[in-house]
Amino acid sequence: MPATFFLREALRGLRRSSAPALAALLTVLLTALVLGVFIPIVQATTGTANEVRSRVVADVYIKDAATQSQQDQLKTSLEDTSGVKSVEYISKTEALERAQEKNPKAFREGAELLGANPLPASFRVTPEDPDKLDSIVATITRSPQPALDEVRNREEDTDKILSATGLVKALTAGLAALLVFASIALIANTIRLSLFARRREVEVMKLVGATNWFIRWPFVIEGVIVGFFGGLLAVLLLIIAKQTFIDPLSDRFALLAGPDTIDFPLLIVLLMFASIAVSAIGSGITLRRFLRV
Amino acid sequence: MTVRMASVRTEQARSRAHRQGADPNVPVVEFRDVSKVYGGGSVGLDGASMRIGRGEFVFLVGPTGCGKSTCIRLLLKEIEPSKGELLIAGRELNSMPRSRVPYMRRNIGVVFQDYKLLPNRTVYDNVAYSLQVIGETRQEIRRKVPDILRLVGLSTKLHNFPDELSGGEQQRVSIARAFVNHPPLLLADEPTGNLDPETSIGIMQLIYRINRAGTTVVVATHDSQMVDKMRRRVVELREGRIIRDELSGLYRPDESTTEFAVRLRGELGVGDEGHPN
Image (tube, helix red, strand yellow):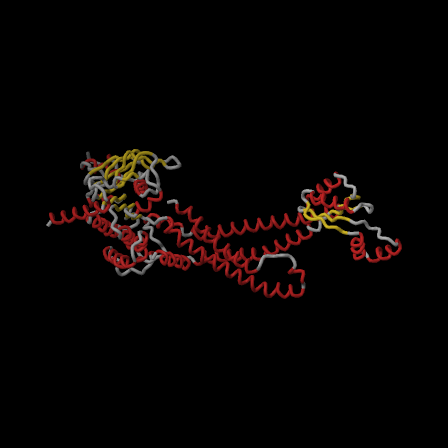
């Protein structure tokens, strides 16, 4: 009896104050829509930024005269340095091949001219955290190894990459936080408005001897219904947009599908859940102010 | 005949007392030196003490701002007293936890000057709500609501909304709602404040009938004609103090003919100099 009673009360509430309910539904719809578009964008940007950052490396050049055991010693010491993620060995021939690939003219002809490979073998050191590369380089140069010739971290490139991607990451994080805050404030405000119109009703219910939860349940169920339909509409619009705009594009350009973004089904479930939870909990909490009679 | 009526009434009172598990000698309402000072420093009630027994009919009278509504709101625990103790059926209200308040209110019927009906519900649903609140079954609701609406004379307006009714009819709905689960105590705050004298008499008769059925009734009013006609217990308040408590009183204290004449002349704006003596 109470469950069906609460459901009927909720439906009555929606029918009787359909304008505020519609406003709340639209708010949920717009917010979910914006979040649904924004979450993949944020993920794509940070994904790209992280991918770029992973290219930050330091090259440790090996003396041509170093023996095998000296090289091994250098390698283990590099691997033991704190903050180092991986150490990759690049032999003289590999180094030449890579160089030729990058700049065929200079190196192919140059190698023929020189008659010998001028490039040294090296260890490519990838740091766990790109920002810590400087200190890693300092540690390596401080401990002299017989095989170690020189350490280069392509300083200028590294600095540029780090500052640019850092800015992008900070900006998207800031925007995301702002958006979430704005969404919550907007939904809370709409719910408060629609409840404010009914505060007298709540007051009367309290005077008749209704317990807080007896009053609250229909409002929470209303919130669930509004959130469900708002979220559902937003998800439908997102699906339509994805199929008409994104899918044909990603077939043509591999780039768009490139960075790891959230699974579309997961995104849908997340948005539905968030819409329902925010509007249900929102109406339940906002009601507290009017329940203090 | 009267004896039989009386015995029926005590029977009812006893069964009600039994239901509450309360001693019939305990007053239904007791104010013990209760004061209420509102946030702005204005005094709502100033050291008021009174006892209202089972089955009594009490008028709280006095000009606006004298503390009548404060008494009603204190009894509903809508506000807390600043000082003193307030007891309903022997239960102290100050120490009552918030979660018990709804259950306490279910034993008190309330009628307001502005009716306080739920605007988006029909007459039937308004009355049904106070039964739904206490978890009454649907069959019981279907049986009780038309019954009580017939008692207040609204059996033809079950499915009208409050804004389709006259003031007197709305007040009847609110009385029906207050009384549908037969509370032992009925509070009325200016129940006839918005109504014309004739409608007021109908409302008052209704409240009187409820009282005759054994319910304790407290009516706050400034309707002097009504109080004079009914001749019930009158508690007069002025600036938060109880200045008079008479068992069968008038709105104004009993006055001699000369006092009455002086007041009448004063109200008519005729000075003493106009008098031949």
